[in-house]
Image 1 (tube, one colour):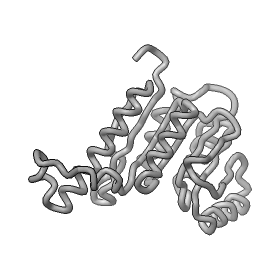
Image 2 (spheres, helix red, strand yellow):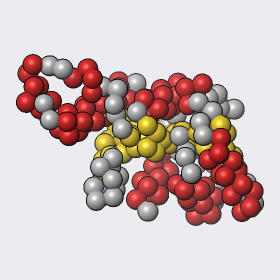
Image 3 (cartoon, helix red, strand yellow):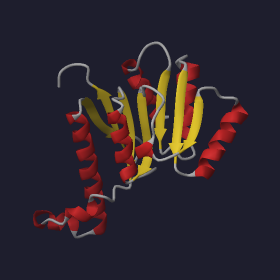
Length: 197
């Protein structure tokens, strides 16, 4: 799984010992949250406290049921809003996979607020910027719906990456999965700098 490969690449930026606290914003059905738990506990041998957060109570109830059925420790799910979530302590890694529209921005803002050492975000459906793109120099690019949508997505993700850089992260935007699976295939990886920018 490409996501787990990307997580393995960033483990060196997390504390080497002690509890690892991870928050998955907009976790949905949590397939990757469960895989992340397995990677960190079984393969990396770490003690974890992973919280999956989503607004949908039915999805969270199902995630809790699966967690209980499997007897997983260090994995919990909460119904809640990304913007108002208050973790119980230091968050070492913030994950946001396909959180829709500005939910990605809320997740990034939360990760910045808690100064997470590692942020992994796969943005989804960037509609917020598109209506603001009316610009004469960009008219040829914006007159066709699909081009306007793609440009809006790229511009939004570029601004997100630039903001993370400004806030003290080494930010990389990379391909998450092949385009044949989803057009939303970019991952923003941000590692908090420990040196001067």
